Image (tube, rainbow, N blue to C red):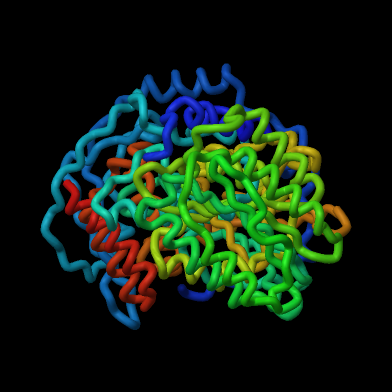
Length: 588
């Protein structure tokens, strides 16, 4: 909880001081790796509350060990997968002088991928240009990656589930408009969460849990990528409760910019089109004049709702605090325990009047979340846009954050994703992964930096977790260095446990799955295509951030591999992701 509050305070402080006074601104996964609801819960010795937490002293010790090691420059291999229907042959291209990265280079030198992991059918490709090294000191403006941790010191990694995707679509919109996103706007877990997955569906439970893993050609030979995949239960639209939605729409002057209010209107029309006649919609608008544009109205009165949407026009300054207050006031007036209650904020996150301090905003959204009114934030526009604030508001409001970068995304989000995930299937959802010190020498969680939870708070249901809507997936990746003992196929590397509360009864449930050394693909070309996709997308995000895996694989190598995966999956969205890598290359 503290980490999330501090992050929100920082975002609001920047927001309050920086704004001007005016407003011109794959393959099927093995059944043996899929956990079911009747799986046994972990033993007291296997990753429960009260396990040790990494301390400052332990971190100092780890730092001393890694500092003592000589950091050498080695040739990192990159893989281009052959686009064949019947085989996934891996082509490795060396990157001369590939650099070490900010978080992992201090733990081990980059090593050439073992020749034994490379198929004999490789056809060589031209070497790719050297990637410039990244300063291990993490210069200002470069976000820090999660630390490399020794499981002998702290075997547990704990974090709150996060289903946000806004960072990816914001970066997509930026790159497609010729702008490189700032490192702090790139959150690796949101890049990965934005990708389609093919996890097994839950069996009589809110979730299914899958653990799998692979090697990666740009990582040392003793490093594995472990994936924790979570699939939420889907709920057919006809089976969900009716919904009360209150839209809080920013109509300030800044929303006149291209891609902002002009995109909000068709997005809301698309949403209303996908709702049921028995759902209800209200609209609050805010500028320097906050008002109710449409009281809560049944969707059966479609014309009245469409007329209100067409009245949305930019005006005045921005007072998001008053907009949220009035929006929640309207939501409380129609609050019904038998219905889904949501406030949806549509804004560019830029504000310059009213209360801008963190206490005022937290008070508004925190009280409402406890009353069962969740907050979804949807960002619009480039240029003057506060991505960090929109993400943190959704986290504190027990909802999720998305970003609209064009008409196609608006239609997808508002007519498919938002309605399909309206029903919450889990509250205070957390993930805890235990690593085996006998087989694992170090691990690092890729992303989720602002979703950390203390290990001992995993089963403390008063500590804030994540809220998950129907059909959502959550994917977490770990970089794991293994001992020689991991060569035994039946030795375990990691055990994952997820815990959540039923949104109606508040009853706690848990689900567990384990990963054996034999379950890890020896070559990335042999791993599930969606896992390959996740590895390369995460590497791209960390390259944009300039931390973690940044510098271990060239953009050219990422482009080749993602295009190859996209061709074999036949998935245009993955091809689009590969195109974003190309856009970044073209920007120099």
